[in-house]
Amino acid sequence: MLLISDLTLLDDDIFTLNSIYTVEFQTYYEIMWVPIADVKDDEQFQKKRSKMPWYSSKSVVSKAAARFIKKYWPFKQQTKVVVLNQEGEVVNKDAMTMIRLWRAEAFPFTPERGCELWDKHSSNWLKLLVETTVSQSMSQSWETKQLIFLYCSAEDSKTVEQIDDVLKSKCDTFKFTYSNVKTKRKQFLSCLKNCISWKMQVNKGMTDSQTLQLLELYNRYKQQSGFAIVTRGSSVLVNTSLSDLCKVLSEHTQWITKKTTRDNFDTHFQEYYKKVIVMPKYSHFSIPIMDGDIPECIKCPIGDCGRDMEIIVTFKCCHDKH
Figure (tube, rainbow, N blue to C red):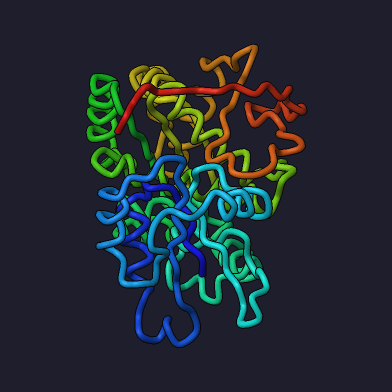
């Protein structure tokens, strides 16, 4: 397995690979780090190398080797793992995403194994996201098809507090579960990006409903610094912005009536949501981890639109050295 990265290789990725680098693993695979960098930095190289129990080149690879890797195993700074068999044949051009998602369960790290694992989890992709990063204690909520509110914001603490207050006051009466991702926000977003990256690897058309739901959730967070999702078990009822969820919940006196029970709470919620939340005239979406081909087509996931979206390429810099 060739671990290909630049010198900014994340410690989280080193930790993940360390977690599967057992004696049993080494019976079938060895790992070699192949660092690529335009400028040599021996101090940074040694710092990363000291955290690895596997093989490594003696320094950043030559320019000729870097050109080969960039040409045949498209490398654009995103860390990847190329899997080779005993004959030196490539069996997977990038197994890093599936390793991040499933760790040792991804063995033997082939695309076919990745498809098996995704099919296993795809009926409840949100459960995969939540239990991997936020909390494993919510498993009973999925199995009993309980109503679940999940939300998060990087900046808007006031709106989050408003949502917290309403849900806290109603959860005992209407028996639903709610969770503010809060301190696990970065881990949740990272796992979400990996799910989208995996779907891009196996489905460049990007047209299935699961991919669109993942993409919509990711873009709510990136564009509006927060997201909100409401599910009944594994069925997504509402995938929306933090402000839209807050609006509907803050106006609960308009739709929670004497006829509202724990069994129809979600129905009343959805009816009012569709009544007061207006679909935007224009939509635009960002795709994370573009290490490969641009998808041929993306269907608009907003409402019942479903049209092919226009492709516009944007280059972005956050001016952050760290």
